[in-house]
Amino acid sequence: MPAFDPVRSFRKLAYNNALANVRLYQACAALKPGEFEAKRVSFFPSIKATLNHILTVDWFYVDALEGGTLGLKAFDIEEPYDRLDELSREQADVDRRLVAFCENVTPETALAIIDIQRTGRIQRERADDVLNHVFQHQTHHRGQVHAMLAGTSVAPPQLDEFIVADDARFRGEELAALGWDETKLIR
Image (cartoon, rainbow, N blue to C red):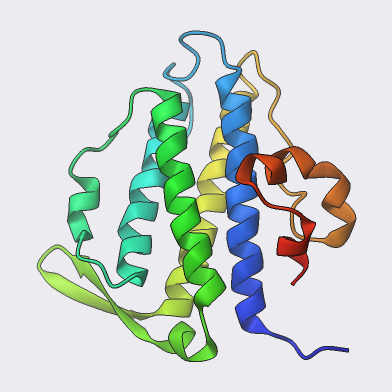
C-alpha cells in the first residue's frame, strides 16, 4: 500500500474544487432571467453576490500563494461581474491557477510561510493552512449557492461526487468541460 501523501490531498481538493465549480456554474447558467441577481436569504443577498465573493476571495488567496502583490486590491470592487458568463470564465481561470499551484506543491512549499496583505499589516501563514482555508471557504459558500438554487427554477446539483474512484460515473461532463480525463484524478 502506498504511503500517505499530503501533497496528493491538496491536488485532489483542487480538482474537486474545479469540478464542483463547473457543475455549479452549469446549473446557474440554466436560471431564468432575474433569478441570478434576485434577493435571497443567505449570508450574501443573491447567487450573484455569493459567486462574486468566492471569486474575489480566491483572487486574494491564490495570488498570495503564488507570491503575488494583488493583496487587498482583490476587493476593490465588491461584485466585479454582473454577468454569469464573465464570472464563470474568471472563476475557471483562478481555479486553473489553484490547480497548478497544488500540482506543484511539495512538502517544503506546503510548509512555506506566505505573506498575506491585510489592512495596515502583513499576516504570515503557512501555505498548507491557507490552502485548507481556501478549500473550506469555497465549500462553505458553494453550499450557500446550492441552498439558494432550491428557491429557483433550477434544482440544486449534486456537488460532492468528485474525489473517490466510485464517483467516476458521475463526473464525465465536468471532466470534459475542463479538458481532463480520469487519469488526472487518480494519480
